[in-house]
Length: 241
Image 1: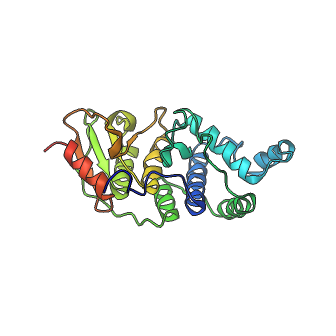
Image 2: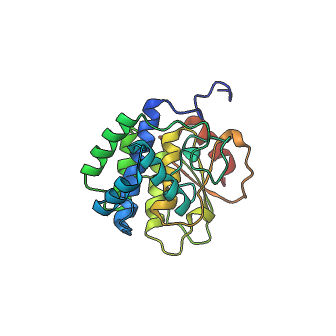
């Protein structure tokens, strides 16, 4: 399939936009539960928003929260990374071409997500984000990861499995050790969220096959059957063996 024929990356439609926001908000609830600040969710946050909001809507509130979180965990929450919006600057969460949610839809989404208990573990946050995109994650068998090892990964199940491994290894560094090859936005959002879920201060290395990025030799491949075909082919071609 040629670059022109591929459906991704492309600007989000309304359904994709809603999935992105829901997955991002669920992940944000998890990191806020892990290290509460009191400024994102809860009665105090609601009171501050009520005093500040003026003519702003819940859609604006979500964008402000995600911009703030994207700055704290670089490139973890912004739509720019999820939808590969290359016209946006690397430190910009959305970019000029991005359209926020419809205010009515945003209010409904906010109320629904806030009413549910936040994920209590990294695995739960990944499952919740994947389910938003109608993805069902499956465990992927892979060898333990060493602190000096470099990897290349493709497929949402492989991405989630590796994030789980890194969450249990205190001497591992996701941004330094892992390159994710992901084209569909659902796969890209799981990879992007790794930074926040692992409390990283550097953005994930996230790319698509058409970016022609050079990778260092000697990377071990971690691949799952649910990878997009072009992502799987590129990862296989650039991994060890």
